Image (cartoon, rainbow, N blue to C red; front, side):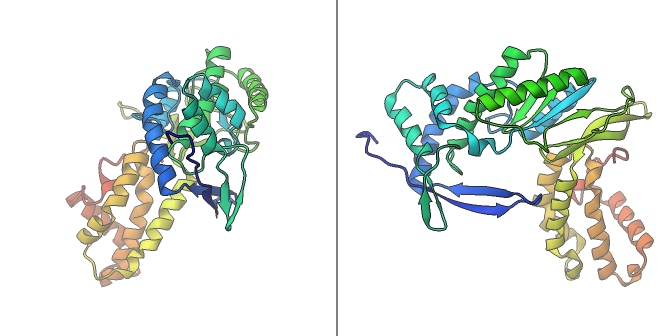
Length: 356
């Protein structure tokens, strides 16, 4: 590296199917390249991260997806929201545009040359190496901060300069812009399309949409009244205030897609075939995964995780002869367990009765 002769290796890339029918491209650099990228990331992140937008949450120290969701819930006030999906932005970052932004922050020509080398290293697919002229290094530690830098220029800073009155949250290539009227939302979407086209990016045609946030105070009608963001679905929901009064809130809970993925995980456990285990042992066995789900999804409408109880009831009906064929009796048995051992399963803690 000191002599300037180091050359990164092509990144091995594989394609895996996405649940919605698309393709997700995954890559992994070799060990030496990953080590060098990690060292580079530690230096660049310390210098660059403080300059990024307060509205950016993805792949940044001290920031997280659930913080973005919580902030979105606070910003949803009146009118419409523009839900923005920057289609495959990590794969479409323009190298020249990105390097222009890097050059504004890095004076050392050796570092600039190294970053350019990582961008141009190419990918290996099915044993064949092919060059790439766009996108950040797939699977590399430095890829997220380079993408964040480009999107800071293409989206975050542009929003601040041109639409300072419209707050937003961006996590990687997903964003929500909070507009106060449909007219403002339509105007912003049109402006965004032009801005991203100038940066050689584009909005996802299906996932980018204008949503009306209907609740007890906003009772109008609009075709789109729900959207997904970071594994949560925002939509009108029945909620309860501190006085015990029911009202309609526009709030997040586990999305249908995330809920389906969780149920698939639980099905693979095949609990109904584990009659040899006691309930307490099943609770210990499943705790690490359930705690992860609760810590992320349970922050908003934890009752959405109750579907896991269906698998516990099914297990109990197979294990206990008195419960076989008696669904109501099995659910009564589960409620009794909950009342005696409310902390046995992670998703039972502080369940809320409303908010489905």
